[in-house]
Figure 1 (cartoon, rainbow, N blue to C red):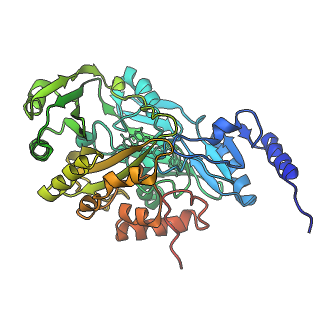
Figure 2 (figure 1 turned 90 degrees about the vertical axis):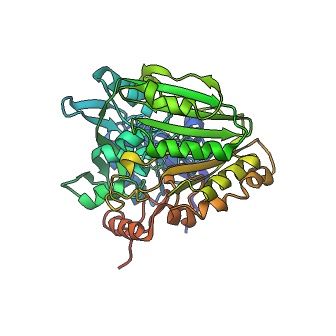
Figure 3 (figure 1 turned 135 degrees about the vertical axis):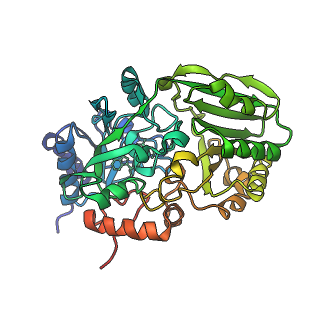
Length: 443
Ligand SMILES: Cc1cc2nc3c(=O)[nH]c(=O)nc-3n(C[C@H](O)[C@H](O)[C@H](O)COP(=O)(O)OP(=O)(O)OC[C@H]3O[C@@H](n4cnc5c(N)ncnc54)[C@H](O)[C@@H]3O)c2cc1C
């Protein structure tokens, strides 16, 4: 058998550049290093392909499968689990599939390329008086966030991003183009709403956008001697509160801040009880265009990383609040995102995002400086299980890892079984395994 030399492989990969549509980058080529890297991961893929359109995606996929190359799909490149790049195989980078089109203004129907960022979407829809409830960060991609569910600033009023999804177009593992909606490939449409990147390369999404122009947005800072009591009083307000208001309570050892986004007729009345929660140290809440609510991704110090945990809790009961306060005392940052409202009105089996009855998403994180020993990451989170054990499970998009145990926390057994059946139908060879992976059902 003849040995293939490194230069032959390299020459072969570079040769692909002429055959696949769009930009194709292999190790050693200009731009490769930037294309190979991602925010939360390093990797050296054999190829990074940036197709110009859906046919280019299909061509890239056919090439990868026929050459036996593993495939990573990247939209915005913000996977916290480091799934935006890998070593070996092909990264299909969808940055060129980023169009935002209003298909039907009275019906508020919009088509968004999977490679668009949420900041660009907000900017493009604003002139039409429209917006989409999605993430809080401009640079995060439409593809990854939507396929995991999508918890945004209007979540209590309008639900998850997937609750506003009307259709998706994708290229399946065998290079076929498929449109999934309520009437076509309904099983696939169910799976795409929370089941992640397991079923194909989604090239575009059709959403029903929300009519939204000006919202009240900003942060209220509190003096906080007693985090337990503050969290309990915030929970009570949210439980009884106006769904036009979505709030996120951020607790750090040095400060406590409530981020607020209100889209309704009387911001003053809706926010009044929150302004009375504790002595206020700062209040930046003001009217602004919805498109300005999304903020840029915060930069970490060079080499630093975030160690994260998350749990969807059915209730912020006393034990869960105690657990959050303990983590804070141990030095972790704790974020509580209010859910309920429109999210909870969707049946748990209506989409692959199943933990519909969660009252809140609890996130705990530690910033780990470059080169710091592992105990810096783990010690402040040592008491995390007090919260995880009381939770329904986890939110896939905020997971820092992608183990089988993670996947089991995201999908309850019935949801997982159904996802595995859909997977068998559309990706029986598990081409899309560089994901929070659902294995195809056997049989
Ligand atoms: C700073 C920051 C803020 C965030 N804020 C929020 C928030 O407010 N709400 C929220 O819900 N989430 C939020 N997230 C989490 C975010 O939803 C996930 O990190 C998500 O995976 C990012 O999507 P992406 O397209 O940028 O990532 P990518 O790394 O491009 O994609 C992640 C994974 O999704 C799959 N995938 C992506 N695109 C496609 C596609 N087109 N077809 C098939 N599979 C695909 C692939 O498996 C890929 O590995 C935030 C993340 C960060 C880093």
